[in-house]
Length: 60
Image 1 (cartoon, rainbow, N blue to C red):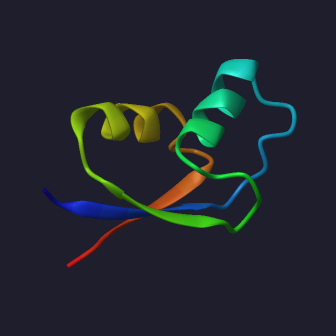
Image 2: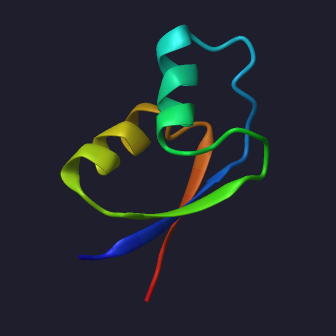
């Protein structure tokens, strides 16, 4: 399965509790933190919900 690299580029402060929990579920705890994850439909849906807070890069 394809992997993607997710980097948090904006703070979760002043966001809804749901968006904060989604960031934690993706493994992002700090600003500029990165995580490599499998590109499953569930993960892609979570990324879509917080797309304004993260940057996504495809891994080769």
